[in-house]
Length: 470
Image (tube, rainbow, N blue to C red; front, top):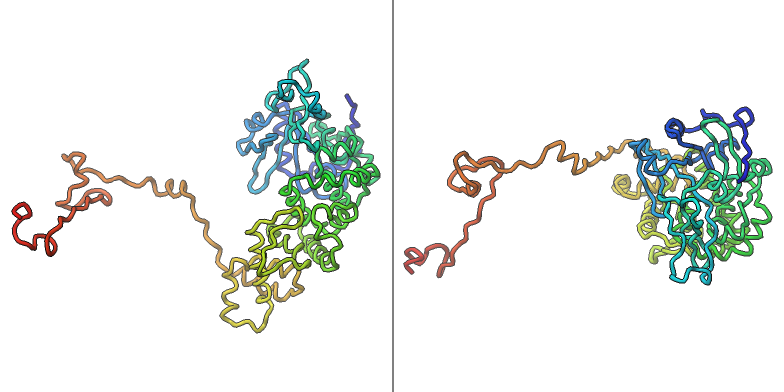
């Protein structure tokens, strides 16, 4: 049991007016229902540094379905560990139950003879007192694949990656809680791993990439132990999920610190392990990232226009990797989505036409109707150095009629009601719907088609007499 360092409200700079109002609403409701509720992670770190947090995440001792009972706008997500997402319009407040710091799993020789792992306790059913403590499930490389059990705030703090991300803000007392020494590391501007970095990077190799991201974004120095562990265990990054690494790359490109982050990744050797094509990149590559960062700096939050094809182009185009006759669907370990690559190629075809004064009028009038038009404007705004052309086409875009949202099927049924069924005339049975001698009643009665009989030499009764007589 570790006694935390508790900083009262008078001794720290965090004010409730700097916290998102919807996050405060969630914190207060959990607290009013006698649950512990803390603002956690990067939001506390950024508020202490005087920065605007990107997200406001919440930690609590309430279980996911207890949270759902308190919020009608709550959705439970996740398979490995259930999280509560509370929706306010387009905004999502993520609420996570405190998790245990689970020890490493025993080796195969120490496993029970029946082949079952002893970590059978699920998050929804915490271990009972006196029961064997569950262990983490890891693969042959030591990467932890399952270690999700509910715990205490202290356990939750010690299972996080770096000390500066393990700070809590208690809404009940308005104090900052520090179990791991994160406040001192914030003052010293250091990235320090919680626990042995060699063990923590083996459990999750993506933590090495995150260390570089925080060092670049916050302008901090990485601790010597962290740098040594990256040097000795950097190769493990190639065991990480390529999809997860691609998502981390997109986050870096959206952050506004892409150039600084990729330079740090290059310096510690991770860039060459993940995407060797970007190692020893030309000056055009770094200039592309600098332009992307400069454009991002004019927006307080991530603009919706920073779509994956534009971000992908910031990496591929300066390297000469976009070929009109060949698909570049991989970049080192990363697999690129074909639809994003196609969107990138289409916008690159459209961009020159936006700045060409000799483009035919017929082509110019048709540009706003192209699917790549919006992406091309954003690309021109970021990389094109053509402010007059951007202003002109943005004006054209603003004059375009907004597409009307298509009502959902349920909405149409609610608006118009169910399709009416034909009504039977009074006094007739169930065969009245097939009555053909008069006008049908009700809405469009289905008529039965009369079969035509085959006749010799022509249609109908051309051979003379009734069919029965021939």
